[in-house]
Amino acid sequence: MCVVQIARGLIMNDYNMQVRMPKSEITTYKDAAKLSGVSVSSWVRDRLRKAARQELQSSGMKVSFLEDSENG
Image (cartoon, rainbow, N blue to C red; front, side, top):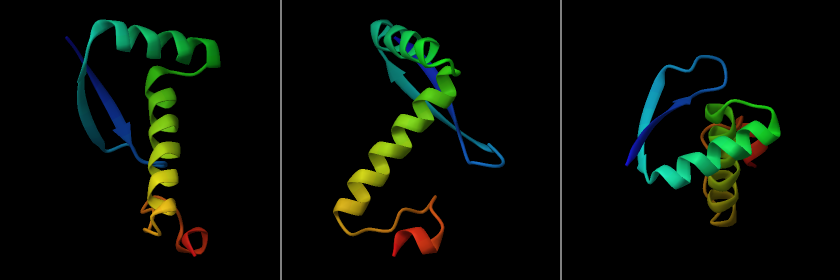
């Protein structure tokens, strides 16, 4: 089992989130991040943001990390 810390925030990454996953999963994320030319943290944050935005907007919910003008 591997623990990954993920930073949050656009300007100041002042929060961490620990995620437990099998080694094969983190290896896959590392490979994908390398292929994309970004850090694992950036790759994971990008994918989480996209998934959260999609799920929340499809339910008509506010997406906190977007500006109010983008939520409307």
